[in-house]
Length: 136
Ligand SMILES: Cc1ncc(C[n+]2csc(CCOP(=O)(O)OP(=O)(O)O)c2C)c(N)n1
Ligand SMILES: [Mg+2]
Image 1 (cartoon, rainbow, N blue to C red):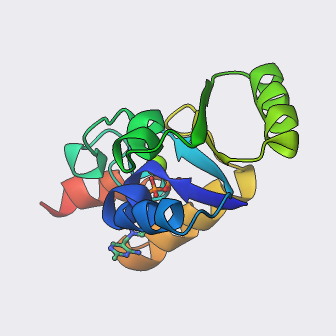
Image 2: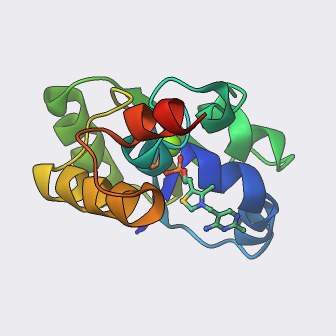
């Protein structure tokens, strides 16, 4: 099982071609949260430098191989995710599950960590962005 973000896959996508060439059959979960969420939590929640171009991620296993040997699913809800995982459990092919998520859907602990990270980088403040704009 592989878990990867939309930002990360845009840097490493050619390995999916190698996976297909070698007839490997992982279950891949692509977390599509419309950009660099970890960075948004630290600085620039809506800044364009945290955006990546939107791709048709679920088409990637189809585009990167001429043999049609993958199952591709897009899920928006927990119920859809459960159904997809059930399918994947018995599949005898590569399964690519694109999981659509909100931009800032993250565990509270990660949000707290990101705030500490921002304070470390930009100095303690209620919000790192406010400190930055005051400094400018
Ligand atoms: C080669 C490389 N470039 C840049 C970074 C900096 N970096 C760390 S996390 C991240 C964003 C990851 O985005 P995504 O994979 O979509 O994960 P998300 O936080 O959105 O779940 C970046 C650019 C890195 N770690 N490695
Ligand atoms: Mg992302």
